[in-house]
Image (cartoon, rainbow, N blue to C red; front, side):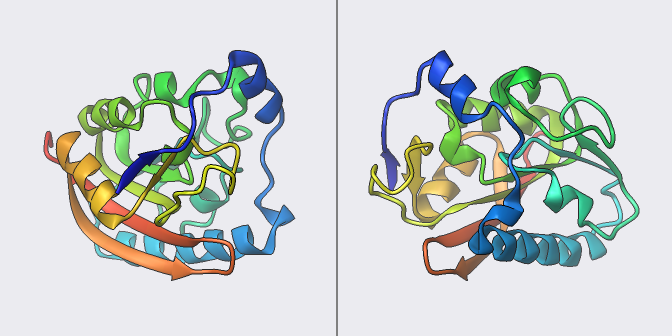
Length: 190
């Protein structure tokens, strides 16, 4: 399943929604999802010595990237150790064309993008690996007014396959509001 939940918001609405940095500590479910994502990524990184530089272009506060235990260089938005992305940094779809690295982290990102296909296609040329978390099976447009898309695991697998990625790992986390899926995929360009 791949389902468009709503049309893109206006620039004014986006500026209002994302005017200030997100704080994952506001919601217990987000705290648990971030903890789970960090643990899974640390397991993955312990098996991959070739990953030396990670970039976080997530819809979040950079907690996932800050939580990684491997000795890798990290980039949040514009600068290493800079505050995480807000709307003033520009759309994530444009930022992905301006940075490169070994690992791109997209935690709770794809469902917010007008064109996740183009985003992932552009990312596949600049990054060797991508880590994605997104709600699993979201199909109710009323559940979250910020989300443009919903998909199941086959939907994400299809998007990855058509945008230059090969999925190598899938895990899920069941929480009260959402079930989350986490994918790690390798670029077919590298």
